[in-house]
Image (cartoon, rainbow, N blue to C red; front, side, top):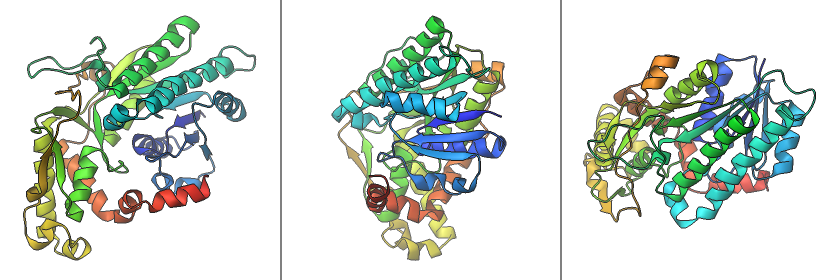
Length: 366
């Protein structure tokens, strides 16, 4: 039985991973660590509180003493490290928080892991530190450039990407210098349930349902590779179970799409859902689709993001050949599942967009 510490486990990808892992490995003990900043949401973990082998810890990975105590108290033998500031726009305007969490916080976890796993007696017989990173550390691609692979040189262009690149290098260094057993995965853009509505896909869905503009940077030609979050969780599982210690694996969705095409696709799907299910018009009266107006009418082009990378693409051949990884969801099925989830979980996204969840959080975790 493993004792997992999942950092950032109340966030979007972390929470999906916790649900995935608990279902697949019910005998493992899971300790979820989260600071519960704006994107951390206890509602993402609903139902897990009834599990006997589940614990939630409200703490900050920047707190070195708290991290070391956590490793000792719970006898952690496995870390899956999601905790990070991750929104590029926020990193442009508030880079300090990204350095603190993504660089200092990751280093604190590595220090705690080294101390408890390598430097003291009575250490766990085996251990693993899995670090979750991003394709943004590789920089940007032109239209005809080959996709990012594990040997692509790092060339981060935003403070967010730079902070993640730094954390990747720290994880590598702790393996090569001290022998810490680590793996790293770099993923493409995730989407799916529980994603905070500042990211492209949930933002467009929420705004379409509430009749707000659908803001698209520049001309919308920027291209991303899209990965359904459950496929990402499966990929991490494979890296942890079959991956070579000290190595990096890219996890992608094989779905390169331009942003404007994503937005138009969402609009068309919402129009079709409202046409098929007229009852949505009563629930979402401000949506254009509620009165037969095309949702696409909400699209608004806005000033481009500073330093906006034009294209990301993941080459997952290594994960496919060495680990047997392959995404299960196509973009069509994944997007349909995501829109359905948002329609069925209005209370979730309204609570995180209208501030009511923040009020609750400040009362319970002040």
